[in-house]
Length: 127
Image 1 (cartoon, rainbow, N blue to C red):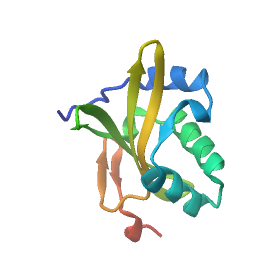
Image 2: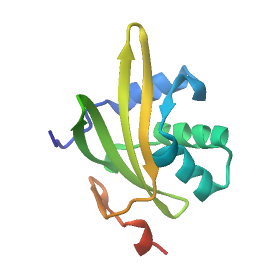
Image 3: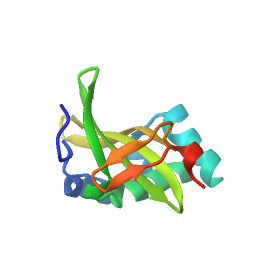
């Protein structure tokens, strides 16, 4: 399923995010919200805002690959934010007329991550 471009168009992701708030989207607690709280010192609500802001800033060079997990397609990204490496895995969910972003992962990477823009080093290798 891997390709040279994301399954979900980044402009579509931005359009969805621009018309919604943090409570309109889903986040996993242990692999998205908790790591952001730990690394940024924010609250759970602050972590949601941080994640959505960073999703708006994703660029094609941050793209790593597309994966299929339990019948849901996810795009994986990697990027440095304030010098810290981050691994990001998202899906766009469509239910009737509603569309929202499901952020399953947003945490420092546990292994090196190849993106279109280069390698994002795992967290232990970053200084």
